[in-house]
Amino acid sequence: MPRGDAALRQTLAQQQAILEGLQVGVGFFVDRQPVWVNPQWEALFQRSGDEVRRLGTAVYFQAPEDWSAFGGRAYPALARGEVVTEELQLRRADGTLFWCRVRGSAVDRADPLRGVVWIFEDVTDRRLAADAMQRYQAHLEHLAHTDPLTGLPNRQYLHATLDLDAAAAAAGGHALALLFIDLDRFKIVNDTLGHALGDQLLCAVAQRLRGCLDAGGSGGHCIARLGGDEFTVLCRLEGRAAVETVARRLIAALAEPFVVDGYELTVTASIGICRCPHDGAQPAELLMRADTAMYRAKERGRNNFQFYEPGMGRQAERVHLLERELRHALKRHQLELHYQPKVELASGRASSVEALIRWQHPTLGAVSPAEFIPIAEEVGAIVPIGEWALREACSQLARWRALGCDCSVAVNLSSRQFRQPDLAGAIMRTIDEAGVPCELVELEITEGVLMEDTDGTIAALKLLAGRGIRIAVDDFGMGYSSLSYLRRFPVHVLKIDRCFVADIGRPGGDATIARTIIAMAHALNLQVVAEGVETAAQADFLRQHGCETAQGHFFGMPLPARETTALLLRQARR
Ligand code: C2E
Ligand code: MG
Ligand code: MG
Image (tube, rainbow, N blue to C red; front, side, top):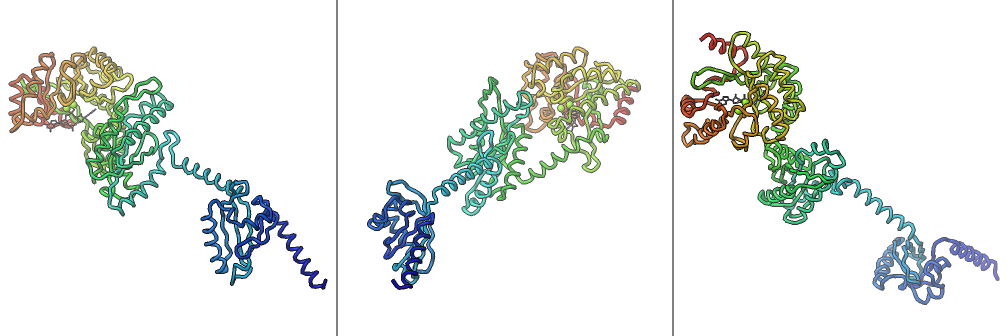
């Protein structure tokens, strides 16, 4: 053998040793057919070299089309001088499938049919690991977008959805509605029954809401929990009426009491609604506006829904501002009491005055009690403010008595103050400290007080009445207390709400209600005060119908203490 042949053979043997030693299947193909494969190829497909050559490679594929499709991709690419790389799922002789990374390069790029080296590598383990990783990733993603308590989508998910849906709505010309749901007084459940029970209630609420929406009619929806007792519903709906229907159904769905851990709990919700693109198109803006509308629903007595309206935001800002400022109002001496006379209609004498609070803020100016008292009630500031008002009114009464003025004083009491554990005791101590007789102090409560927590209220009122303190029901006729209901409470006076007084003598107005209240109050042995008397004709009418006392601009505006003192002194000298 010539020297050159021996060298060539040695080179070939070396190459074969390398190819056979590789951890991958290597095959040499001519005219798309295998002419040589290494032992790893044989092991990979569980076929001998002979079988490989006889059967070709179509048997590796799950379907003949897959095989021809692969050839159709690979050979033109090889002809372009490219290295073909693909991951394919292939079949072994025993039928099992495995993932194979396939790499092919042509020996002669001008004509790939003359020879291609194919390298087949089993990458099943790596693929499985990648799949597991992907599933794990998906799981993490799910966690990041899910509220762990209720299993509902969370705030992040809502933001992402809102982003996509708002853009799609803008592009597609359709409408979206975002409903912001906040449970009413949920904090009380949490505080009194504990967080574990609160959590159970939230889950039950989530389930109810979901069930209600799944029942259809919401035009496709996404319900999410933002945290705490806040939920949102995003739905694709055209027109206000359709959105209203969904809001009503959500409120109705919660109406049925929940039974949690043996407790029967009644839950109501306030819902704020914002529409896209009607009210905005930016996700953050939409959420904020729905939230603002929800606050309005709370202000309107809860358990209702409100649509966002421009200007609501400004109002909400004002509420927040007053909330903040109220905390300092007392210690910064911004509060003052004014007094409005209550006049005996028979004699024209001011036998009593009602203490009405005034807030003079250094930059906001005078803030009306009609505006800030409800806010003070909401944030609890009314408790110290109410205590201050009673103390102030009682010490003023003591000063008037020292001056020889003969009158009594009426102080307004908020329903919120009745939640104080020892309200009656605290009131009596304040009156005693001022050194005035209890008989000269009248407390004005609203009908709402009589409706809430009746047993505790009756007990407190009985204690007070037992000491001779007079109880008046303010703004009577606006609430729901029937006159017979009043029998259960130690009440001495009814104050006819000024809207019924305004009806007296007004064209088209109806004086019947005022007349009826007077007659029925007398039948129950109660005195009557008419509020908001503005004209002589109203005063005459009330006098004729037996109303004892009247209060209103016709008889006198609420005045600061100094001016009230002057008025009472003039009266004392007469
Ligand atoms: P209220 O107790 O029903 O007081 C009567 C309101 O009617 C007062 O409004 C008074 O200024 C107004 N008024 C009196 N005469 C007339 C009239 O002839 N025509 C009209 N249109 N209005 C008249 P004000 O002072 O704005 O107080 C509003 C409400 O704020 C009070 O209604 C009361 O509920 C509450 N409030 C005032 N001071 C206190 C307080 O110290 N504690 C509590 N809890 N509430 C207070
Ligand atoms: Mg009053
Ligand atoms: Mg009133």
